[in-house]
Length: 146
Image 1 (cartoon, rainbow, N blue to C red):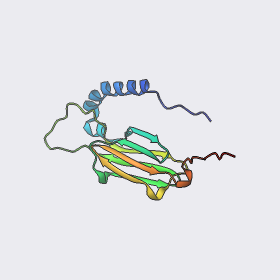
Image 2: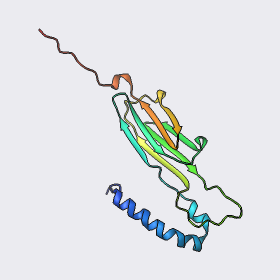
Image 3: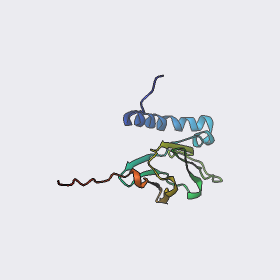
Image 4: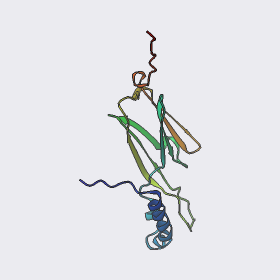
């Protein structure tokens, strides 16, 4: 089975630029509805220390109740939906922000403690802290002099 590496930032940037060029023409051909529905991918940072794993996702413009976090069988999943607010008698001239559903999943090691996972949401950033089990943390071993 062939595995494809995730696209490098240059490829993602090129695709973003192409979409920005094509979208205005697509809006006139297909209407706003097709442009603002679909899926997108929330950018995520994952960091690890001896104490925990931290996952930070950019989800600006979303309400806390529109975001769902689930941990099952070692898989942490973040999902939600960002909807375009419909306005009467408004003509959109440009739609660059992405709308629709998103889902991101991360396989975490067995050394995490799922019972103590916490999440917070502030200024468009979702932060999930996944503590490690005590037995998984590195321990200093003292050398005895004989």
